[in-house]
Image (tube, rainbow, N blue to C red; front, side):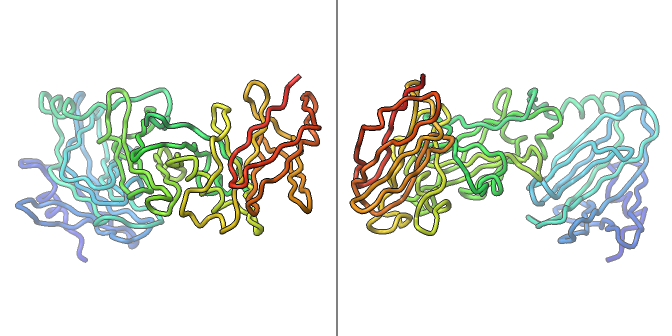
Length: 404
């Protein structure tokens, strides 16, 4: 395509009566902008559609007085948080917009003196989304009352001392999952995990001054929706909500939501509709070849899970088997690691040891297993002559180990 000339750029980009001079890049591997006419508007549009790790841009110079402001209209349709409009003044980033944004106006203050301004559409090395373009129009250098009014019209967003992402749904409880293989860390990084009952999960976000709400997005796995924080202001923070998957509804036992404080390393919250759905997830993704679940969980407040049963109709546990959990806690409800217990049927016994969450978990053929504590860690007491039996259908059995 033929790049627009300086005269064509000026005619398309300047506000009525404006006299700014614009230039397209002329490098062999740089992407210019082209003139478009649509809905009675003549404007400039980027040309690097589907071109990985590329930039399409125009530049211009302005000489500003104290109190002046730069103003322009923009529109963008892009991969939210990754590809989008980038505004630079003297090579320093001033503003970014991405996702789906119809025509809007942006204004920023300029210091007195000469400045080089770049209006760009920048793409990363990964996927595309939307129309994959940015558009610009009505560029102006404003002074006096016009500059003050344009700046006053810009939204003011809440900021906090730190970036934070939390759950606000009533009845939600945080859980801690023991992940011996590191699979969860590999998939979700330093995520938070919750059981969120009901049909909707609600979240709260705070952003520090380094995060731009116009280019910070949340998303979720329930329906793939994306939420721009600039559209989610709720007093001194930001809020959004999603639906919740479950084995009963979709055969999928979990959901996750993310916030792109760092687009390349977003913050995750992984959530489950119930204890049964969390157990179904662990059994599906953390079982050995013999069906033994190698991951366990507890509530973050230290309380034991209420059940280890798999939801009715789930095929996670094979027919004739059941999921069992032994929860070892002290008299204060704190987990006890390092308890050795024998799990016995009519033919043999298998010793197992409680993990950092005080849990012993296994999926075995349904049976009323005989259990006997044989070793407790130093500093604890237990009458090892005691014997008990598990429910054949599975579930959680809590055993109190006295701390000295």
